[in-house]
Image 1 (cartoon, rainbow, N blue to C red):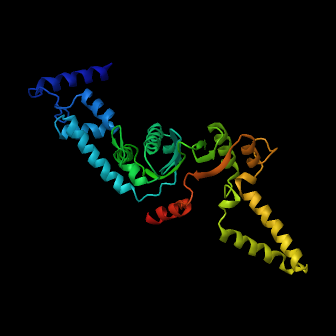
Image 2: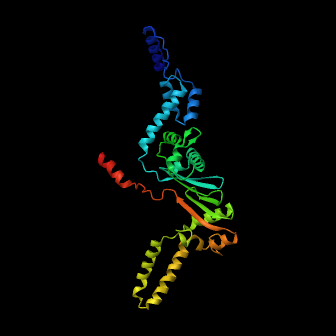
Image 3: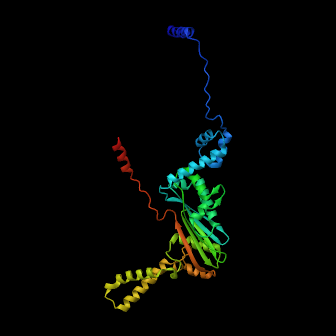
Length: 322
């Protein structure tokens, strides 16, 4: 009790002898004086930029949403240029159709996490729809195409700014016309196949596209095999049996038989139809009054050299830096 009383006395004395208190007034930040929550929300919806980025640029332009959006767009283009050298081997394949034409578009990013992002998926779909309305498979023409929000390129640059990864439209594959039948199949958004036939139905094309996705044939028909590929395979097979000791005419028959087997295994129409395994794809087409024109198969990231991270080396380098 004595201790409590002493503390109370000390506190009262300090108050009594303290100089006149200076009233405290909270300092008001002027950084948001011209910016409202509604303006920040409007700018975010228009650009997809982060909240803090929107605050900063709105403050810089005294709440002018239009000027702020233009500034964010410029910054986004600059960021996109900086990120364009980074490897983008993940992504997805999007599909779209217009009339008798079907297209596949491969859009790449750096990580599979971003490949699953809703904004990335929406952009891939937008790019595919724009590609379906164009002639040919020219990526530059696609990037210059007008879409909601600008061009495909400006939407891409804005997405790079928002997500923070290198995003690229890598290629376009297109098949079909008013006089042919096309169909497509996209497996897990990573393998895309277009099939084009004469006669038949789009559903038949889709079934055959599923087969192509699974079996990955090298050619559609024997007529599609380049002559140099056939001669190269013939030379390889001849070398295999050259030392067999058999007569030359027998060797020729052996090589012809093995070459026919090679073509049957690698040409789509000669392969066993994987869905039923009771007929060839060629027989399936014949039963449906159709003939094969061709197919296109693409896979996300194929041909792109991916970066190999050496975690042990990174840890060693960090330890050495200490």
